[in-house]
Image (cartoon, rainbow, N blue to C red; front, side, top):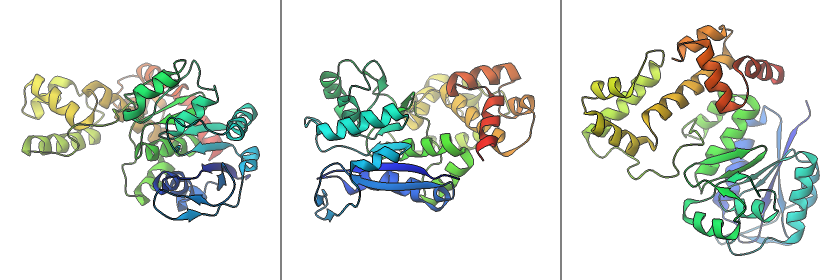
Length: 317
């Protein structure tokens, strides 16, 4: 099997955390087994200083992009600083060859500076969204998501959302089981859907009611085959419809229907990857009710039918 080469671009004054994210995700034991080869390359010559007070000696330059199937820009120095022309040219050339380009956090600025995001959807750190819109008015910016994939041009929100974006790529390449295994080794949530809000005002349970709601979410995940609704879950939580809706959004950053759909799709993916269950059985186990409903939701969310998803996954496994 030919290795899947990933070029991660470092630059002077890079944050070590931002650089470490793709290196960790794609160099973990579970990822290495899938044939990833991660090469950190320098956007500029010489020692690269970091924001943590130490410097990096990087062995590769931008020529590493010529062989890469995926190119990751883990951030950028400053939103107002134009990237060097050599870097932009190398990214455009990689994209023309068919490479996937990823801009994590402020790395979205670098992708936008190439012009490749014009007319496309993108996101970046929520604190920079308005500035990004001003700098790149031709890009359709969505501030309310963790990451976006617009036909091989990926962008993510800030900091920790970069982990979600990289796990999404891993899941896209090799399925949920491998991504979950790597997430467990990183001691993080195995799956946060890209459409989830960038930040939640109340991220941890603040009282007994929210603790009870967290337990309800665990129970619901284990019983997705049941016909859960907003009203049935509110009743089980012993809350009014209005109170339940408010606390649910505070805790999850999304709606009940959106959360249920995300969980059901994730379960469907796992079952398609790891079992030989008929599509109709998977539709029932995941709570879609019918094979037609599963196919409609699955195709809309993932751009491929359940049958073709299984075939593609089995073909590359």
